[in-house]
Amino acid sequence: MTEHAVVIAGGGPTGLMLAGELALAGVDVAIVERRASQELVGSRAGGLHARTIEVLDQRGIADRFLSQGQLHKVVHFHIPLDISDFPTRHNYVLGLWQNHIERILAGWVDELGVPIHREREVTGFAQDDTGVDVALSDGRSLRAQYLVGCDGGRSLIRKAAGIAFPGWDPTMSWLIAEAQMAEEPAWGFRTDALGSHGIGKVEEGGAQVRVVLTEAQVEHAGEPTLRDVSEALVAVYGTDFGIHSPTWISRFTDMTRQAAAYRDRRVLLAGDAAHVHPPVGGQGLNIGVQDAVNLGWKLAQVVKGTSPASLLDTYHAERHPVGARALRNTMASVAIRRTDDRTKALGDYLSEILRMDEPRKRLAAEMSGLGVHYDLGEGHPLLGRRMPDLDLVTADGPLRVFSLLHRARPVLLNLGEPGGFDITPWADRVRWIDAKYSGPWELPAIGAVTAPAAVLIRPDGHVAWVGDLAQPGLADALTTWFGSPAAG
Image (cartoon, rainbow, N blue to C red; front, side, top):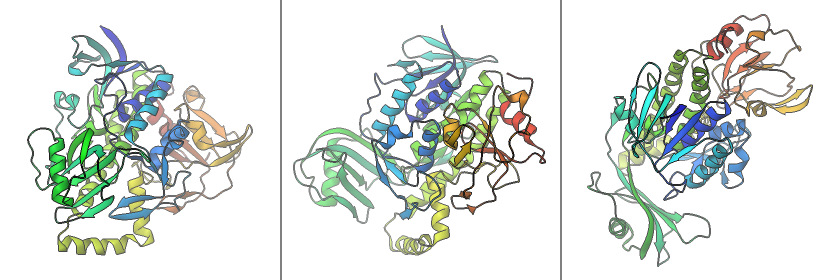
């Protein structure tokens, strides 16, 4: 039986990101993936939001994605919401299809030496007090201290763990296809009594077109076919434009569900295994990657014995509310797309509100991930929020905050007089940096905040403590998040 500290079921964006996070921490991690390669049929999800780009920047790999995508200065909720004035280096959405995102992430994970057991699936598992026995579809088994289900909305891991998946059944259904057309189609969007429909290029200059059609019925038997797409096109456009040679046909609905728990002892869930919702707004992939970045360093510390297993409970406590908010957001977005006169009136009213500065900033910060706030108690506005990527001046020269997080290690950033803090018991785990910063402190949707004297930054880039030499609580924060002084 092969042993790993952590086994990840599923090698999509969430599983790849989690594997990278664990590998950076020196944890023996392996992925089980049913595909023979990272090739993905269909382009799937289509972009990275600002906070996801930030977390990739925190690991020093954002440029790999930015060099291959297109920048868009808006997020979408009913109307385009401008984020170009947000205080971040990445005040945009990166247009990049999921097949490219996975390919780049897989390259990074390969550099980190993570093994991927391909053409296999997890078929079951049994957990005990010391680990998990993981059964594979080829008859082999793996032993791990922890198993993480990143295996999508139909997650076998979630089902086998007996974790409830409450939510809402579908009320709308869409066909999506990538194919070729013999005739020039009606490019762009069209709205009718059924809803919105669209036809566009998959890649600039390519022959493939991407078709998204709202269906008249919600319930369907079997997988969608080219005939289904052709008939739906005729119903909307009066012709199917000679559609042929499909590479991908799929169907999605507005089914909305969330795992009741993100953890059952030694089994955890992340990404679509933990939450499913319609893809409007492009939040699903992004939330999954951010799940992984929240979980990775915590799981690494537990595996290495630095922190108690109870640290993993903070993963559910912090990420479940974020997922729940995304579910509400996408449900509202689908509801406002309905084409009856009353919904149109509501949409017009909402458009007026969202053109106001404050509502725009609040909703755009939520959708972009820049507004995520973990409840770490009362205190400075930075507490629990993502640390801005400031340009620092240090004894070793200029540094960006995000460059301090490339190895996924926590940082105590002292912006006051050099020296004074004593973190000797945590010196093997926490990096201490004396630095100066003279610019403004501003948070998305919050605005200007008071400059702190010192901040404790977690590996996921969120602030765990704010204070100065005279303010208590640093030792408690260090112990809570990075283990007791005697650990390690």
